[in-house]
Amino acid sequence: MRASEFIEKTNAAATPEDVFSLFHAAVKEHGFDSIGFISTTPAAQRAFDVDSKILPALTVNCPESWPKHYLAKRYAEIDPILLAAPRLRSPVAWADFENQDRLSPKQRQLFRESREAGMHNGVSIPIHGPAGESFLISLASAASHRDRPPDFGHLHLLSLQFYVAFAGLATEATGVPTMPRLTERERECLSWSAQGKSAWATSMILGVSENTVNFHLKSGMRKLGTTNRVQAVAIAVRAGLIQP
Image (tube, rainbow, N blue to C red):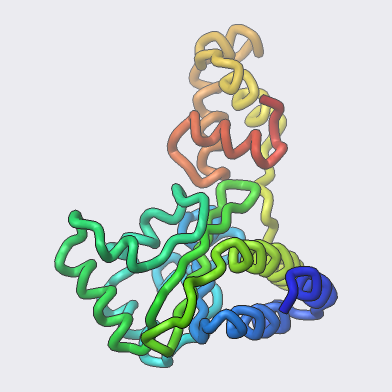
């Protein structure tokens, strides 16, 4: 399926399930049978109202026994690709991770068992939302051999459009906002922090106590899904909630 055709069809889709079906058909043309759309950060879980106590998959189409096995083995806690997802910028092959020397025996077991479950030649595509959300789209083939290497560029484009269309319909249906809502004071404190001002300096500028500034900064960080002030500022800037 051409990218333009996929974009047109997914933009016209009526439900998230329709978008997922179109995506499945598109990646199947590339030889991938299994799909997992997974939230990898607290902000991503909140965006789709995902229970972080269970397998963080938003939707999957893979061998039936695998999600239960993955959950029972608690692989989400050690899956090297899942853990790296927030830092990834481009698609990666599972084999590249499996070949790393620093993997633990349990991590190697994860890759081995995924193949035994019928998932070969895996590829994962990172997706980053506007408010600190991080997702992973994982694809795998039932066939153990491929005639040609995957077209990472096209798969990346398809995945980005899938996310945009799926997220728009899913959040519209559930009423879950994709953007956090910061108070005016939270935005002010983060904005001054973005300009390099300390909590004390910000308190002098705003005419409030340093404790008050820290309170609003911590509240803003919590809403943005981080405990790091620098990261919170970066997320808020990317989301358009404050000016750099």
